[in-house]
Length: 241
Image (tube, rainbow, N blue to C red; front, top):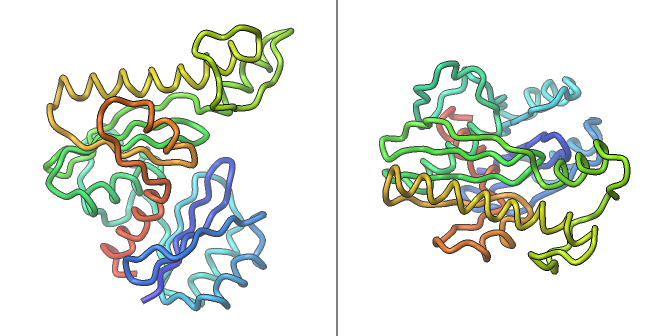
């Protein structure tokens, strides 16, 4: 069975195609018009589809998916493979629900910390009883670079360059170190905190730059840039899409 998983994030609209549990392809959508989705449907003819969206998107896409596939839109009413004993579970972002679902589906019965590097960095802890107990949200990489430029008079807008010195020697490398090394140190600090509190657990790092940051961490990390898509697939399984 073919499943189409759509992830509409703050900076990118993406689709992932699964044949059974096997991930086949990731496709970037240029916008939320119908044409790109229609092309994917024509090429892969998926039987099921699931959508995670944290933005206002074209509602016609949902109507198209519902008309051509067994469709599910991720929300706080979605049936999940975990519980969320937090104060207001309806406020949990769709992306975080998908990450928690992937952790339980692929690493069941274990404590899991899923760290997603996107527009924001989210820290998502799911314990071995399959309870999503929360975590943290901090500014993402591009947001950090942009905010230092936008909220100062003279700091330039610089781009990521992973070949940077931790001790910067000019304005550009100081900014790169502050953001890139800063994120590495932040991630390491959170991992150490959870390790002291919970003992043994898996750490999954996801997002386009997950591989880079994973190389700089002492604890064994599972770097999986497709982890959110895998969570959407897991949710489609639970909801019999």
